[in-house]
Image (cartoon, rainbow, N blue to C red; front, top):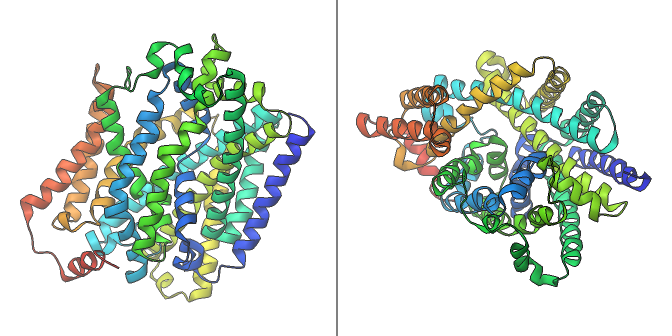
Amino acid sequence: MQTIDYISIVGFIVLLVSVGVYGYTRVGSSSDFFTAGGKLPWWLTGVSHHVSGYSGAVFVAYASIAYTHGFVVYVWWAMTIAIGMLFTVFFIAPRWARLREKFGVQSPTEYLATRYGIPAQQLIAWTGVIIKIFDVAAKWAAIGILLNAFTGLSITAGIALSGCVTLIYVVLGGVWADVVNDFLSFIIQLASGIIMMVLVLRELGDGVGGFFTLWDRLPAENSQIFREPYTFWFVLAILSINTLTYSGGLWSLAMRFISSPTGKEAKKAALLSSALYLIWPLILFFPMFASPIFFPNLENTEKAYSVMALKFLPPGLLGLMFVSLFSTTLTMTAGDSNTIASVITRDILPTINKRVRNFDRKKLLMLARLTTFTFVLFTVILAFYAESFGGVIGLILSWFAALTGPISIPMILGLLPWFKHSNGTAVWLSIALGLLTFIIMKFCSNVPLALEISGPIITSFIVYAGCGLLTKKRVSEKVDHLLDGLNKD
């Protein structure tokens, strides 16, 4: 990278801090800090939801799959999200917004106390927080590696720099700063992605027709919709996971809908995000699809996107491209931090110390900022030592990440009246048996990849729905009132 590229990076960091200051002027309460007071416009929410699903992994791991397997990576990643989001548009996103609008909810797990009882709520809240501590720490380490690869900055210094920038703008501006950064990240990604695509098309020499003639220059298998190990059943399994994840199983995405003014606005935001997932990755991934033509014998396929960028982008634009990678990864980390802080502040601390429930507006906002600061700082420190006990972090991420699917079942389906008879017992059993299924799958050999991925979620769904069908206990008035209130604006 050259001087002009570093200027792009420094300029972006200054912009992030400025966004934090802007957000600070719009935050006067914990509601503003966590949910923007329910004032996020649908287009900003939709773009933020879309960008929050990206990270550096898209430009590394997924780029590698695009190089080796071709079009199938779009089918099982972006297209399954776009299709799964249709379920979110009509059934889930509006209900998240109504939780805040009608019941004052400020975190994705807050409503679970009424829906299932405090023990089940605490199980989900604590498990999710523990998972995210190590997940966010791993993301800090990934950002450090990214900075090291492009700028030569040490990994430790890269982690510290990223953490400090995030601390400033998220602690100051809360969700306002986070979603504005999402929007800026998308604009940067849009610019660098389109420029990259145009330059590759020009090199191919077929103009716009290069979108179609490209595949004639690649192995025939690269244009297939399904290709081992990404079979039809694998895509179906990913579809079920992405449907739950992007409807709010990933808590930071649920917070985007909670921050919408009304259910109708949340529905429009979800539809925009779905459309972006259907269209934008086709443009973004085009250089990755084309990379085998220009680098036919690439030893490390994870560098497919970076070598294409180095080949095609001139100085200045290379820095812009790096900023797009850096910002999308950073915004995921910031969104997770803000969301986890809301869960700790709204759901965990009031249960541990009942005095928190009586805090006034000023004290709650101070607590929100303190919790966010502490969480970010702790995960940054943990990231410094990631290499020292990488085996432990890898183990925790591998095993406890398996809970993400089973936890999503009671969180998402709990919003729907169809499952109103599934109670706290169903939550405990579905999560426990979902995890047990994951463990069994890990120890069994020759388990198809699709079954290994979907097994825990299928088990959790059967147990959760089955408990509701078998018990048919009378639902409390509070649960009835909650579910009835979520049906319409």
